[in-house]
Length: 525
Image (cartoon, rainbow, N blue to C red; front, side, top):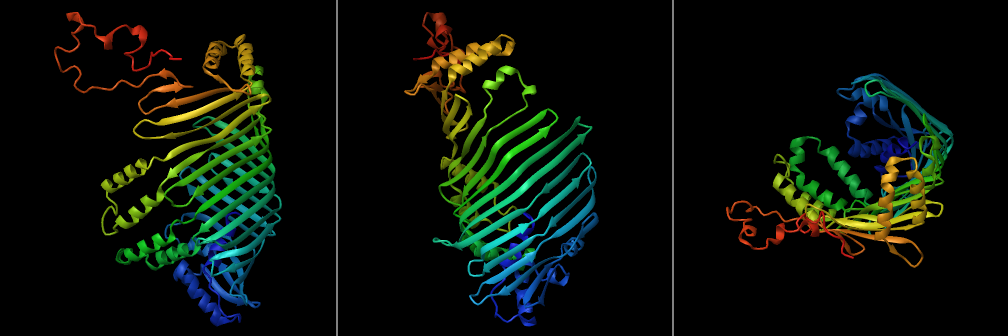
């Protein structure tokens, strides 16, 4: 369903509103309009076909005809029934769009490592929706299926995927600043994926099974430039010839600028309930597991965000020493990404500068200058407030990193609740584990650097500078790197002051660590 529905949406997106009367003339007009986005050859070769059926237009997509039309397709076998959308104009200028996307398909080919095959089935797939040509988007859409199966076979790997019933919804409205705002949700029950890897060359031979009784997907977007993106698609189809494309590149640049910022913001989240991974070493699991992604559009101060969350984490205990039980996280909340990302300036400069009559269209010098300009805007790598928990132990961190030069400038704050419990676990481990015996004194030393907060947590604020210096809670742990002097060693009299009785402080007593680039610097409390 995830792969078929977007294709159906793309086909319907290009349909304008015609008269409410459904007839052969309307079918021809619809075919002509679709050819703007998919090319006239798609109709000439039978890949797309529009006909009148039961008071609606039937848009049929024949994937098999598309595969046969490919110049160098090497499929040994391909079987898939045509996919069809039923579309009918409404009195308000929008369209009713529906489909039965129950489907089955299979193919085989000879890959670089042997025979490959894939087949899938979708049971009782149904779609009902309303498409608005003025927005170039579905104002609402609902789909469902009774189940899906997919199998794939390769020389060294095979996979079997199945799901139970699933539903999906999409809504869209006109955005205040142009484009379309949308929300989309999808839920699938009883997801199971079985993977078996057998690679004699690497020695890998093991099965994995991923399970979740409920998989959910949530997405939303703001200001998605649907119509300008369709205009770009139409331009690409109309200018497939290289000579024509070069002659019309001014129009291409105008269309590309009109499509910016592509979207203002998009966010998505995958959620898994009672997630399990069965492996030869045991079962991994999480009561709740989710991954989220968010990205601003092409802007001068964009943000990029990733989040990974899990509760009720479990791992096979037989794979680890007993003492690790108190330290392994049962709940995680990790947040990271980027900020102050200026893609707008880069995009507009590149669009203005490229010339398809040159090879390459953008010079290497321009590319280097563009990257330098991007770095000069000081983009950041950001660690949002993130936590790892196990009972009374919680490790939290946040910070950011910039790159003013070749080396980063970073600030990270780490605070820990229950640090004494970590020390106790390492102390117990040291009785039987030599490596933990070596780590235990280090854990005690780290505690000495910590600052005790009012709630009893220990905090370490770590600063690393581009000059190589490192401080912890304001105390110098490592000084700046030694500045390299290219003239060093060229003067025959250099370094002889000590022989003349003069104190050479740069090569003096190593006990102060002053001449080791900070590597042996004393901690300055």
